[in-house]
Image (cartoon, rainbow over all chains, first blue to last red):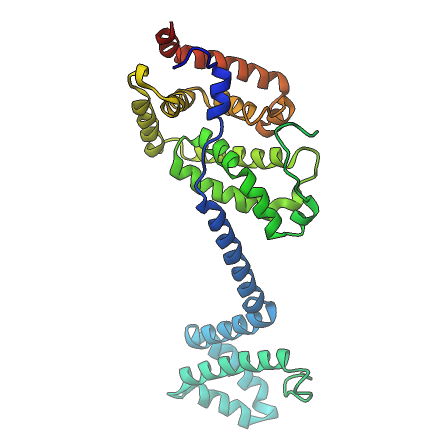
Length: 135
Length: 186
């Protein structure tokens, strides 16, 4: 160590550490990734997509996993409601509920519900008379 | 509030518009110093790299919070410092940090007679890392091309008097730690 070197000078010399250059590239990649993630969420996680899917999910959940509750409201209650107005509707709900294809039917119904909702939202301009538009 | 330590011309407006070119220009100039602030706190190069990366994203995402009441660099150093300090607080018991501390110490032991400038700087860096965290950060910032006390105070979230005290004490403690070298000189 030379005598003329002072601590101050050495500290000036050692003050700054050398950072790896890849950090700049990593930052750029992180920014791109963040943009992509944002784009993905913007496109796929908008309420118009999420709500119908969630709604269909709830429908499917109650129809399949909470069947007693579902039957109570949609079959028994509807049956008593429709008994006088339209016994055919009342009977068909109980027929569907007790059918072997009930789970498949519930799934198809849920997906159809979600698909129609999406179609309604996105195709309004193209399909002026989209079936569910005026509901 | 322009200091000698900050000569880079950065368009803050462009930064706030998220111009990646402008950010790149800024980061290219300040990367080493941001890394140094983090490294002085965490004392582990791998961790410092990860945290520097996170700091860069924080700066990029939070640039609109910069109120231009201080130098941009000080604002960035402040983010880096706070991020590193909270990391250390969260990982107080992490062994890897202590392991690296030992490693630095081991490297710093040697025959001073044979130390060349590069080795000497490594030796002093090792000793610098033995200082208390506040002292070594204050000393480091002070030696970022003469960063003003006011900016150091802002970066560390303390007052100017405390900064002066830290730098003074840090320098004295470093001298004590380097006593061995000084004795060799004599």
